[in-house]
Structures are given as C-alpha cells and as structure tokens.
Length: 172
Image (cartoon, rainbow, N blue to C red; front, top):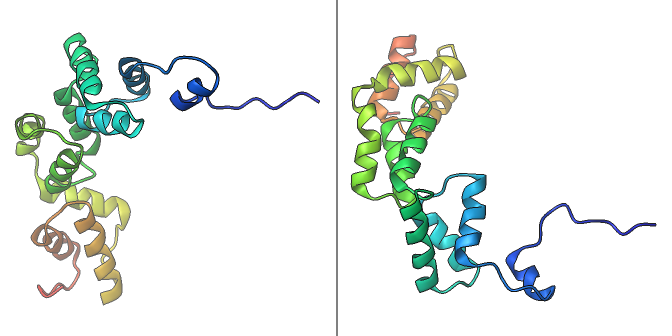
C-alpha cells in the first residue's frame, strides 16, 4: 500500500522540519496575493501571525507595493464593486474600515456610490429575497433585520416595507 499524499502544499513551518530554509516574507505575500487580493493591513496581520518580524514585513510589502502587486486603492475598488447592490453604503464603508483601508482610499472607492439610490437598491434586494409583504409582525421583524444587516438604515427599510404594502409603525 502506498502512503497517502497530503493535498495541501507544505506551510512555512513545515519547511523548517524538512530542512529547507523558511520562505521569505515577500515570497509568502506573493503566494497569498496569487490566490486573492488583500489589503496591506490584512497581509501584515497574516505575516505577523507566521512569526515574521515587523521590519521584514514592512520591507517586503513596500517592495510589492512599488512593483504594483499590492494596492489598497485597487482592493477598495474591488470590495465596493463586489458589494454594491447587495449591501448599503454603511455596510460597505464598515467593511473597508475593517480591512484597514485608509479614509482617502475608501472615499475614492466609494465615490461611484454617491449617485446610487439606496432606496432602489434596498427595494430590489427585498424583492429578490422576499417578494411579498410580511404577513405578520414576526415576518416583518425578520425582513427589517435582514435589510438592516445589509447596511440599510431603518428609514430606508421602513420605506421599502411601506411601498410593499406592509402596515408599518415606526416603532419597529
């Protein structure tokens, strides 16, 4: 019987066990960026978690940013493009802050959302998810929670439900 092969590639810690030198922070960061885009803050946290000194991380990330592999502005634009229409402006802005995107980069990325109508987006999302006015207070509360969890304000949510024909009191 043949020994089973592991499906995952060896991690940086496995290299030391196998007698290989550990990968440099730059190589590790490029491997991560090859899978998906990351913000600088996220990469810093991931590399620090692997035990790499802060100075080495900053040097590697500076080199990647200079080469164009790492860009918070590009990452912010991707997050906004991915979430617009399914999330409200508040939720998108919160996600950018959580990912460590600077305020100027976030403002530039969110600029195209300034012209969008949150009421129309929330209505389309509500229509796609529910499509019918809530039949009872429990269902209404569920719909309100859903839209609020997507970053829409209570006033927008109540306007969506009023337009759907649901009896809405402002105490929800």
